[in-house]
Length: 198
Image (cartoon, rainbow, N blue to C red):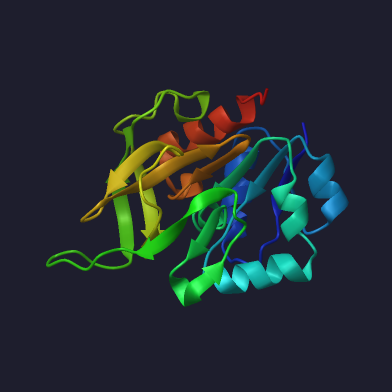
């Protein structure tokens, strides 16, 4: 099985690659459209600003490529956010796969923005991707979030409910970092590797 990890210009890719290697997978870190199109699974990671990530994807000619992928695709953290239509962050147009807008987490007394740290998720819809993950703890780092909608497999809460796991057809997303989330994160990555898109 070939796993392509898309070079979207973010940092901290090594921890994701190592997490996949611990599962016995040798991923290919690439911005080559042909390698991405031919892969059995595609992972779109991301750390940083949405606008810069979209510029990087555009520079590599990957926006249309990603939108047209038919194999399972997993967006992680900012990579998940890129799957949506747009973001309040610099009023950025995103990939448009999930039809809603990301908004800044609401500031409330005692809550830090960005959310940095561990939080649980609540599974709302049964799916092989979220199997055995209800109420598990995951590591989050984010300021912007997607609302809960028909695309939401699991939600979390940081002063407000937001989408923690999403699915739209063959596109999946995790707002948290599975590669930093111990056994629960490894289980999520394993679930993704076992998905079959019909």
